[in-house]
Amino acid sequence: METVQCDMPDYMPPPENVKKILQDSKRIAVVGLSPKPSRDSNKVARYLLEQGYDIIPVNPGQQQILERTCYKTLEDIPFAVDVANLFLNPSRVPPVVEQCIRIGVKTIWMQLGVVHNEAASKARDAGIETVMNRCIMREHERISGVEM
Image (cartoon, rainbow, N blue to C red):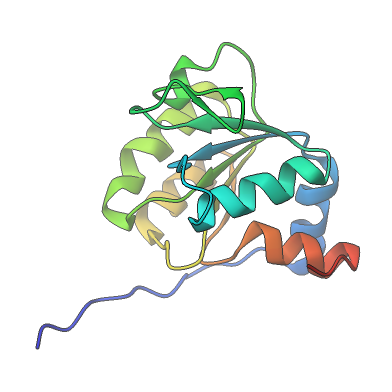
């Protein structure tokens, strides 16, 4: 049986920073957003839409998700985004972090199970806050008292 290596985040922003991210951010690009309603990325994006966030789907294989224009990459989005929420295999994180640095994303949020310490360190060196291995929906529920 093959052992899967799962990194642990070497950095986590303090709770007050997480709260500030969720309060101050308005536009969230969901990278790896699935068009399938049963997938976690879709459930989380729908929740964030219901909470008043502007959700920008990023998935190269789709034209539209959740009745919103879908972009192939972060760099294809013609306006600024506050948060890049990553639903990606950790091996796919570094090039997306490079895009985040180039376009000036304020926060990179890697969902549960997504950890890439080297890429996160590079993002922080570029002035981008990083959150790893946390569900943005659960964190929002926790700070706002919303229960599903």
